[in-house]
Amino acid sequence: MADQILSVLRKLNRWVAILIGVMLLACVVFVLLDITLRQTGSSFGGTDEISGYVMAVATAWGMGFAMLELGHVRIDILRSRVGALGRSLFDIFSMIVLTGTISLIAFRCWPVVEKSIANGSRANTSLETPLWIVQVPWFAGWAWFAAMAWLTLVAAVVLVLQGRFETAETAIGAFSEQESAA
Image 1: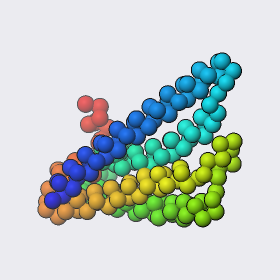
Image 2 (image 1 turned 30 degrees about the vertical axis):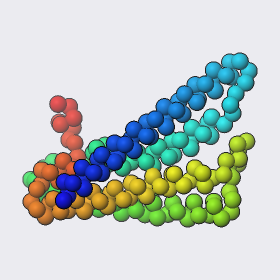
Image 3 (image 1 turned 90 degrees about the horizontal axis):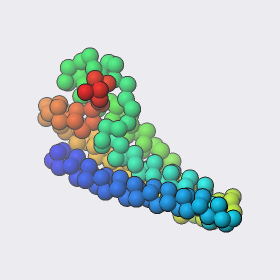
């Protein structure tokens, strides 16, 4: 069951990563077109604002992919000096801390969105973008990351309890400098 959960999460997050990549490429094209237009004396306007929104949404949604691909930075000086069970326990502890932190962030994001919706808040820029348009996908990205973290944590705990330390390490471990240099 844990293997299936992790497999499904990886597949889903690969699609999320592709969509985020397409969104970032579209943003790049938009900015490049605006730069080209500036050479002719005109501009779309607001490219800095829009690219900032794109980066916020891309970051929130990309974090789950980075987690499942073991892309988050981890200091593993102690972890590398213990056996498989010890590494698994360090990994579980790391996932508990990450999951708790991300859950708190996602939980605290919703009041920001809720207040923007209730107040009809708009950006203090020339575009006057209704903030909820950007904050809803931003919040959804953090909620997605929190859900991914919880499901990954549960799957990893199941794997460790089954004594499948190598599989757990593949799911939530850390790449050492020696492995990344090879």
